[in-house]
Image: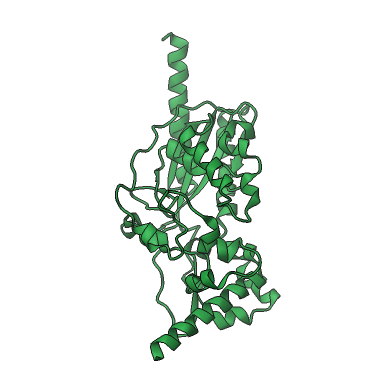
Length: 329
């Protein structure tokens, strides 16, 4: 290796270290670097099979721009690296009130993570540009069907579990992900190793069987999909299995041993709102549109829409009444 090559590697390593430090200062819990090469066949091939089986349900956008989804370099001309970040959102559930209530998935009890992460990715990009003004960037937070978990695993942030979530051994499966694709060439980190082994707790915890034994997720059966993405009426068989989940579902997360020992989120700028985690169903049903918008502005729940949320609340209330009737009998 000649002197100029040695110097390039040295500068590369120095840049990566300072970038990682800045990412942590901005509030991210995890940061890793991978190159901008396409994801491996072991991730791209199952995606094609998943789409062919229509497991994406009504989420037709998942099949759009699939070439970009598996190849981050197509999202930014001249891309060399992908800086992957993770934000811990682990929280413990609050006690259930006496009134008939519905549960909100824990991720939705924080401020909208799309805005929070993207703003900080922009700040990270500004930091890098202050060192190299010629760098260009593309910030991604669910903006395209990018296989972000595959990239995060390749960047050393964790492994993909049977619940299809990225699992970090210290932080568990509750991690928001974001990516900063850049023309800056950085030395890649080592990919994460690990797997769930013979643990099937998440599969056993899924009441609808959406987490299939063949390692696919059938979104059409998933409670998170049914309570957020699904349009129209929900079949009685699936509605009954929704239980008290009024927005999203955490069952496969709560069952994960890594969640049980995960450290709670400690970011003071991104705080869990426990009062939002469990809501009285009758109050949801009686919400007016202005009340809905006022109460949920700045959260992921707003995307669901008031009519969908009310539909979910009615299903949960009917399930609650069914449980009460069975207990009485």
